[in-house]
Length: 236
Picture 1 (cartoon, rainbow, N blue to C red):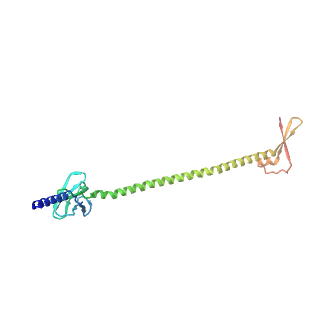
Picture 2: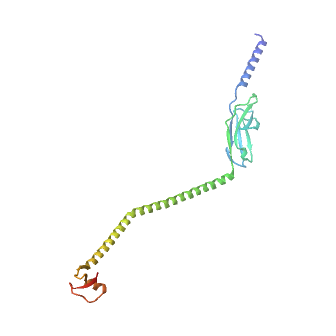
Picture 3: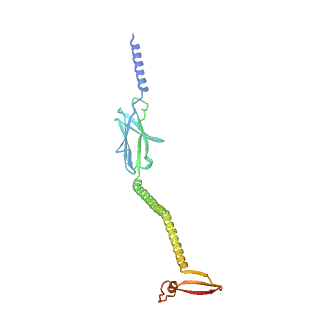
């Protein structure tokens, strides 16, 4: 085999190896935030993208923002992307990628990092909102409790009224019956005191009066012996 053939063979093997390296996908980089991924507005934060190789070019992207791109060339294996005076619009999801000096293709994207920006004004309002909600809840609960209490008292009062009505009506009926009986007894005693005698021969009717009854009615102090009677003639 001639030297020319050997050179051509070696050259073909090298080119094939380079093509395999170009077609090989680079591993994912790692993206993290320092000091934290949750920061306050108007503060600073650093997003660090780390690659498994040195002498790389790293780029930072933002999800749903095709115009956002930050690129750095590093002799080491990482790049730092600094954010100062953060605003609410800086919040979002970020990811990074890299490429080496030997490759012209970018690596796979890193896992997405969610950057959260908190507003101090919202943090101050949050406790007051919780307090207002708690006050409203307590007020509503108190009103409902008072309403239920009054309703319970009203129901108990109505039940007691219904429960005592039959007893009161029974007492009234018995009292009226007693009054009627007493009136009937009084009338009977009066009728016993006055007795009507038989008619006389000349059309005169004699009424026998009880002297004791007349004495009581006239408040007379004289007392007649029992059994004495007077007669009054009534012309018919």
